Every structure is written in structure tokens, then in C-alpha cells.
Length: 114
Image (cartoon, rainbow, N blue to C red; front, top):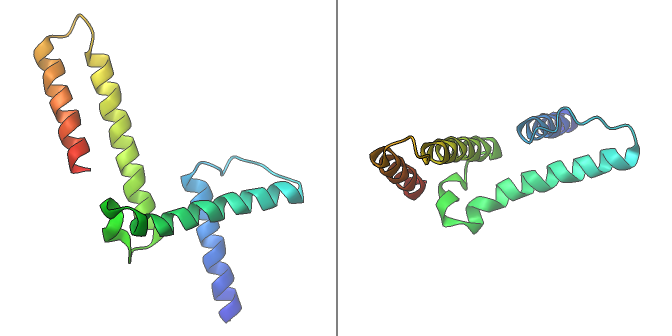
């Protein structure tokens, strides 16, 4: 039972990692490719475990699961993409400069909080 619990944790983590990094559509058939994929997933998992100890910004995740940190990083990435796209689209001749200034302030204030 102990071995099964260990394997289940590995399988669950593997599934979550490949889903988070969009590797779920990646089809492999050769043993060498499977080994590369497993190594990639393990590298990502190890990075998520080490990041809270290497960067003070993520220190609050030292006792958290990698899934919590992954969720936080995903949210940050989505927010930055959204705000970056919003600001770049607002910087046209058709938009008033006040709107561009407000969006720039919003983008800079959220990056300071992050």
C-alpha cells in the first residue's frame, strides 16, 4: 500500500504538471521520448519546489504545495498578458492620452504589488 501511495502521488503530480504546462496534447511513443518528457516534468516540479527558497517574493510558498505556487504563477502570467495587451491596444492615435496614462498607472501598480 505504501508503494501504491507513492506511485499515486507521482502519477497525480505528473498529470498536473503536464496539464499545467500544456503538454497533455504532446503524444509520444518511443522510450527515449517518454524519458525526456518525464525529465522535463521532474525539472519543472523541482523548480517549483526550489523557487520559494531562491526568491523572497515567493517565500510564503515554502510550506505550500507546488500546485499552489503553480496556480499563483499562472494567475500572475494571465494578469500580465491581459494588462500588457490592454495597454498596447490603448496606445493608438484614436484613444485619448488620459486613458493611456490610467492604463499605464494600473499596469505599473499591479506589477509593484506582484
